[in-house]
Every structure is written in C-alpha cells, then in structure tokens.
Image 1 (cartoon, rainbow, N blue to C red):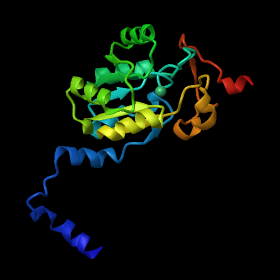
Image 2: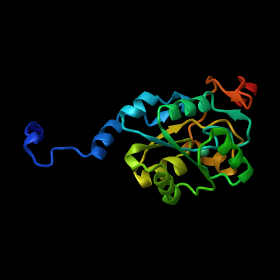
Image 3: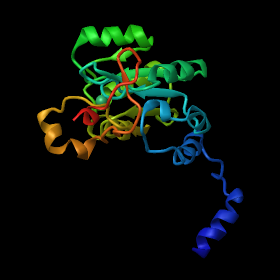
Length: 205
Ligand SMILES: [Mg+2]
C-alpha cells in the first residue's frame, strides 16, 4: 500500500508516466455506466468526456422491437442529436430480414451491417474501420450480453447494455433470457411505431 503511494507520488519522474490516449480514455470510460434503461437515457456529454467518438448500435430490441411493435422512446432523436455533436454511427444487426434492415438504414441514415453475426469480432472490426476509430473511442450499445456485450469485450470497446424492448420471446429466451437481457421496466415509458405512448404488454395482462 505504502509502496503504491510512493510510486504514484514519484510517478512524474518515471519515463513512461505520460499516459497514452487509450489508457486515459480507459480511465474515463470506467466512469461510464455499464447499463442504461433506454438509448435516450445515455448521456451524450458523458460519452464525450470519456473520449467516445463513435457508437456501434444494435437494432432489434434496442431501437425497435423485433416484431415492429414498439420503439425505444426518444431513440431516433438521441441519434440525431449525437450526430449533430459529431458522433459517428454504425449499426450491427444480427437480423436477417434485409427489407427491414434497408428501411432502418434509410430511416436512421446510418450504415447498417446485417447479419452481423455478433458476437464474432469481424463485423465490429469492420464497423471500427469504417468509422476510422480505435476501440477505446467507441461504445457499443445494445440489449444482449451474448451478442452486444460479449462482442464489445472481444474487440476492446466499452459497452452499455440497455433493457430489452418487449418482444415475443424465443424458446431459449423463455428458458434463460433473463441471464442475457434486462427486462424493459413495466413503469418505463414505451412508444408504439408512430411514436405514441404504448402500454407495456405486462400492463395489459
Ligand atoms: Mg438486440
């Protein structure tokens, strides 16, 4: 403990005391939340302070529910605001319905790669290359641990996991969905596809 303090007090004398850009960013990124309720809850100012310059976004159940029933409140406005602040975007979707991906590419005006085969790093690396950013400058935002969080970890990006928009559960999600996704809070505002307030399915039961 004492040795650690002494070392830190004389660290300015050490030749490698100058932190690299990435280690500084890593320190600041420790201050970023690991989870957020929705995309719009992510503080853009905080991202900037942490040296984040780009966002790799998930589509299904992060921006729109995979059955096209719900929108994440304020997500599109948040993306527009982030773009105006200079953030670069890339969407990685594991979805295979190309017509849907094309529609969202036009609607959000961001590049989308699909199927991205997350968590494998190939698509994340392609996104980083296209954004011309290093992993420490990019945050991955998505709803699933086994695709978004794991993929971000494999390429060295920070990740913020958002709650998963209500959607019809797949068989495996019925069994272990809660291990990899955070349920959307019943009391949280929810939008339908027209941006109007919608009832959470659990409120209707
Ligand atoms: Mg998802």
